[in-house]
Amino acid sequence: MCKCDFNYEKYLDCISNNNVKRCFSQFRIFSHHLEIELGRYNNIGRYERKCKLCNCNMVESEYHFLLCCPIYNDLRRKYNIRCNWPDLTRFKHLLSRQNFKVINNLANCISVRMKIREEKLLKNAKYFLFHVNLFAIFSSVPNKFFVKL
Image 1 (tube, rainbow, N blue to C red):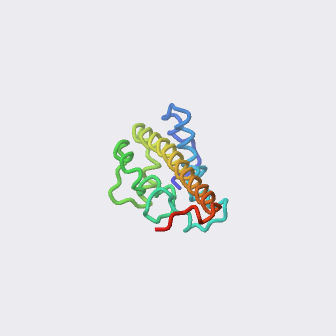
Image 2 (image 1 turned 90 degrees about the vertical axis):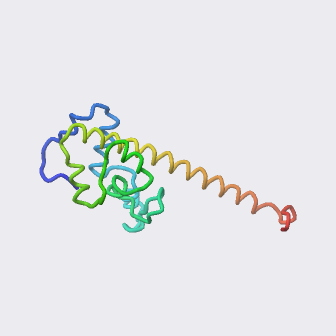
Image 3 (image 1 turned 90 degrees about the horizontal axis):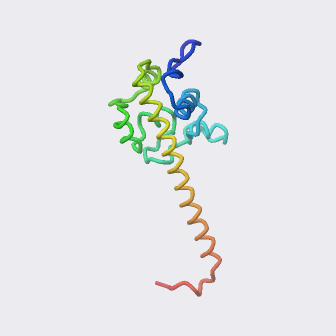
C-alpha cells in the first residue's frame, strides 16, 4: 500500500495510545474488518464487497473508508484530513506522512471511525433481526387476526 522499503516506521513512536496504535497498524497492514477484507474470507467477489453504511455503491476499501465515505465527513473535518479530489496517489501520500501531528490525527480518526462503524453495523444488525423476528411471529399468526383494509 504505502511501504516501499523494509524499515522501522516512525508512527510506532508517535502514537502513545496503544489501542489507537494497534488500530492504525491493523489498517495499514490490511488486518481489519472492512468489507474489502471480510469479503475475501467469505468468498465474496471483490466488487461485491460494498460499504454497508453509505449509498455510494462503492467497495468498502481502505481508500473509501478514509477519503470517500460520506458517513465520516464530519470526522474528516474534525481531524483535518482534507482531500478535495481523492485518488490513490493522495491516499498513499497521506498514509506515508512523517509529520507527528498528521500521524496522530490520522490514527485517531481511523480509530474513532472503526468504533463508529462497528456500532452502526451492530445497530443495523439488531434492527434487521428484530424485523425478521417480527415477520416470523406474524407469518405464524392465522389470517383471521389481521384487519383487512
